[in-house]
Image (tube, rainbow, N blue to C red; front, side):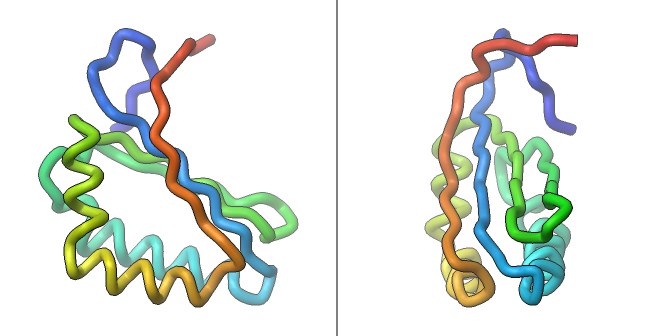
Length: 106
């Protein structure tokens, strides 16, 4: 389960996808399959969440990893490279960005 805390020693990755309403559900299905059958089983994976806007034109993915190297190793795997090619066909663009938590507010 993801933890949002400035004191947490982990790597946070937020990926945004630009999609069309016609491909949004297809991409969500592809991402769900990737998390269920591959990503969640990779070393260092902590947790993730998928979010979609009302217009179905943006998907945001929040994931956490024990180390940035764990995330990078997953991305470089043959399996994920093939999945990313399929994902790329379903969206206009996507960009994973690594972040450090600056603050968390309740």
